[in-house]
Image (cartoon, rainbow, N blue to C red):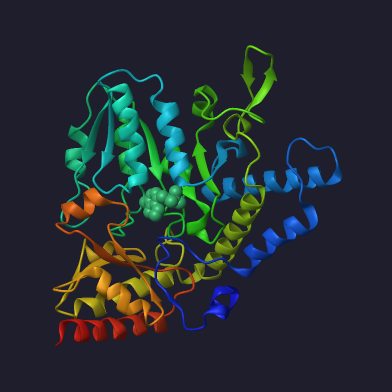
Length: 406
Ligand SMILES: Cc1ncc(COP(=O)(O)O)c(C=O)c1O
């Protein structure tokens, strides 16, 4: 698989274990972007020249690829954004516009800052109350407590699909069912999940789902917001300007239909095309291993096997502490090494061309709850091999030996 990703030709000894931060791009995605600028570049939706038509068609076809990938009902339920972060900011603004003082939003203690701070900001302005589903020692959410959080004032639930710190999958379907029984809307942060799990928004029945292309082998600067058509049609606009309107006079403007209502200005056209190519890449490689898949929900079974291998090997090291319940992890492991600062380990491993992450992983409240100031995190991608994992374990042992002086 590495031969399909040019970064590994430039850096043949690279052991890249930071895929939760961003993924590398296959040649097919890079070529699709170069091809667009070489052969089809034009703005979309306006020009009647042949290039404009072609660019518009490619952009709209990309929307259909995303629609199929998420199993959304309609292409217009797919809004191109810049990222997960932008998608959540958009939703926090449009969903809270009509909320009243004292209305409540439920989040979890697991959340990335991108699914926390936009809600904090709007809560401050509108004087809303934030409530949190507690995370248990296993890394799972306390579903019993979740059920008790609802009152007649609860309006929104916003939750991650896969924790970027603990690597466990949250029970979205159950969370949605309970929220809907309480007449609440559900936002799902799919930033980490889309590269690991087959997402079916109709089956999950979530109202909104957001993700970033760059964590799914696509370029940076392109993201997706899925929203149920009947909701997006009724909700207010976010940004406005060119392309978001159907009629304008000097005093007022009438919003365009979906999806353009939410795509203000010239979008990241090549990004959308690159994202569609990345999704096709993922689907092709996922389908190739389908036969051997025990759990049909997991996109890449080899990532799960490598995760289990790493957990087994790391658990044999007495100095290593893994956070969260091991058997639920999907491609992502956070850990500490007793007596050694995470940054020292990360720096040692960087010297061996092993990329991993150290710090709070943009989830400070969770890391604090785990009693830590920082954690190390390894996160796997489609191209990681058993050799990568063995090399990592070998070098981790070396780091411990050297830095602890044992
Ligand atoms: C769970 C989760 N949500 C949101 C984000 C933010 O993604 P982006 O920076 O692409 O907007 C991340 C990024 O790491 C994440 O892991």
